[in-house]
Image: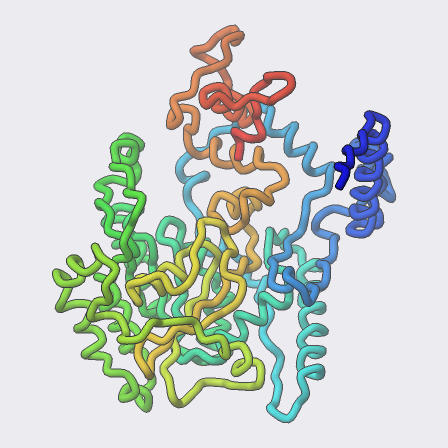
Length: 488
């Protein structure tokens, strides 16, 4: 059989292939934003009749495919991106500790900005009727936020993601609001607190997570603050890993000298007993007998030494069920067909912002990896239930970005938004550098051509450029410092 030679691919054909690819990308961009004209330059977009800003853009409807549960946020226009880039080249305006590092609930959240609440429904209504009512209500909620006088930052605009929260709240007996102890004010939305305690009337337990990343006095201070601000809230602390506690989390030297974490980290279940004790204190009286709380708490408190020995291997410990634990695949169908609170189980629902450690807490309770985790915010796409005992189950809810009035850079720094999807990261670096001496923390040096290196005035762009030089980040063609890569 004769061998066929490969058909030659000329430079002209390659040029036509690239041209067709550009045309395809332009058509795709035109479908996503019909008002955008690729022939306009950035300075022309600010003219009347140009593309609308991010606050006036509408959310794209969720499809039935793989992107059905993908989070949707407003995007910056090209004019805003260019303006933020130019602003990052201006000298930094340093803020004092009181102005830059303090934030109250009034600064983070507004009383006029709430969250969408599922409309009333009955068992006799069809699926299309219920979903149509929810879609109409959600669209009116979006319009109300756009018409609000408050400047609302990034928030979830996909109805399907909000439905996950509604279903978890409905089927749960006790809600666990997971809060990152490094910034509890930002991760404690008062609108969610009112929705759980007032609208649904269900008990709420606030879990201060990741306590291994701050000093002990910081944890105690936050617990004292929440008890004074919200006396009815039940508080508990949690730490998923066994790490050396920080002595002073305000000193840069102490954090630099901290030992590097091992690659393989075992889940810590020493504080699970305190978590279950808090849940027992708010559990309804008629359901206290369903779960053997005393035996369950003793399983995590009285055998800490045995747990430390068993965590080094892969064998099941006393705190694990006899059979492998797997997420309940029928949870979505049960909740969708109208299941409220089941009388057979005590369900603990974990809710909160993305990347606060909800899935990791579940793995620590079960002492093995039963739900997938990632550093990327929004990794959990669908709520899932995990049985701890035959009558106690955990419900992991996907993280939601709740409406707030803090700046977009603060949300990016707090880990609420995927870094890979950030359109311009310079604003976040500027926000951080105005409050923390980033150039001293990273031991950066002024540019070599600076006239007065000792009195050099830093900017966010200069910090990223110096960091790129320090790490060896250069562009492939011009061999210039890759500021964008260093910034991210």
